[in-house]
Image (tube, rainbow, N blue to C red; front, side, top):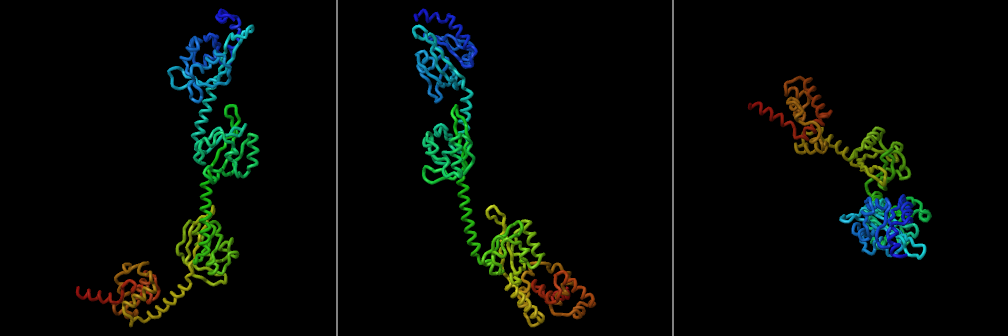
Length: 505
C-alpha cells in the first residue's frame, strides 16, 4: 500500500463502517494510523481517559504519552517504547497488559486499564492498514483487590491464601508470620504440603477432600511445624475465594498455644493440689457448691470419721448424717449458699461409729476445672474441749471457797475459766453504783443477809439487785459473778475504798 493510501484511510468508507461497529461497544477502542497519529476513539475509550474528544487524547502517540503517564501494577513506570500505543504501532501483539493511568501533573493514578492489541492488515499485500488498541476499565476490580489486600495484611488474625490450581501460597499476612516465625519469602510459592497447614488435623482426610474440591473446610485443631523447630497448636479453617479469575483457598488460624500452655499449667497445678490434699495431716474434703455433695476426702478425714471415700463421695452430707443435727447442717449450708466462707466455726459431727467429734470447721470456695467447689477443713478439738471442761469444773470446785486464795491467784483462775470475759460482753460501766456495791460484797463472800445489813436495805432489795446483776453480765450463779468481776480487776476491796472516800468527804 502506498503512502497516499495510508493518508486517505481517514476518508475511506471502511473506516466509517468500522467506527459504526465499535461505537457502541463497552470496551474502549482506539484506532491508530501506522504513521502514529490517533484516528478515532469510541466513547468508552474517551471515558476511560476522562476526556470528551479524540483531540483531548492527543493527535499522536507522542502527545498521548505527554498527557497520560502509565505504569505497571508493580509501580514500575513505563518507558516511551513500552507504552501500549508505541508497542501496537511497532507491530507488537499482546493481550491482557494491565497498566495504571495517571493524568499528567497528578500524583495518584485514576484508572487501571487492561489492554490488548489488534492489527488490521490490507487484504492485498498484508501491510497494516489500521492498528487497534482495545481497553477495558478494570479499576473497580483492582480497587476491590487493593482493599482486600490492605484488609488481609492489616488483619491480625493469621491467614494464608493458596491457589487451588497448584496449591501454592500466593499471599500471607503479617499475623501468620508473627505467629509462626516464618519469613514471607519462606511461605510464598511454597505449597500446602511444603508448609503443611493441615498437619495432625483432627479430620485431615476430610480437609484434604474439601481442599481438592474447592469447598469450605470446617474448623479443626491442627499443629503447625515451626521453622525453628517445635509445633504450635492452632484452629484452622478454609474458605474458598476467587482472586482475579483464579480459584483460591483462604486459610485462617487461631493460636491455641496459650490455651495449651494454660491447660498444662492448670493440670500440673491440680496434680500438685491433689497430692498435697491427700497428704495433708488436717482432715479435708472437697464438695460441690451446688447440692453439697462430697467429691473427695483425704486420708486424714477417713482416719477421723471412719468413712472411706467410696462410702461418702457423691452423697449429700445430710444423707450421710455427718452433722450432729439438722439445724447445724442447715446453718452451715445456708452460710455456704450465701457465699460466705467459714473460719473456725465450731460444730459437732458424727463419726461412722456414731461417736461425737467436736470440730472447728473452715471452708474456702475454689474452682476445680470448670466446677465451683468448696474445700472443707476440719480440726478435731474433742480432746481439747474435754480438757477445758475438766479444768473449768476444777476451777469452779476450788472457787467455791476463795477465802484462802490471794487476789492474783483468783484473777488468774477467773481468766482461765473465762479467757474471753475481759474482752467480750458487758462491762462494769453497765452496772449502777449500787449494783457495783452489791457485786463487791458478793466478791468478799457475803451472803444476802450480810449485804442487806451492810447496805442497810431489805433482803428483797438485795435479791432484786443480784438478779439484775446476773441478767446484765450473763451469769446465773454467785461463783460465776465473782469470776466475771475478778476478770475485770474488780473485787470486794472496791467497797472499802468507796466507804473511805465517803467518810473523808
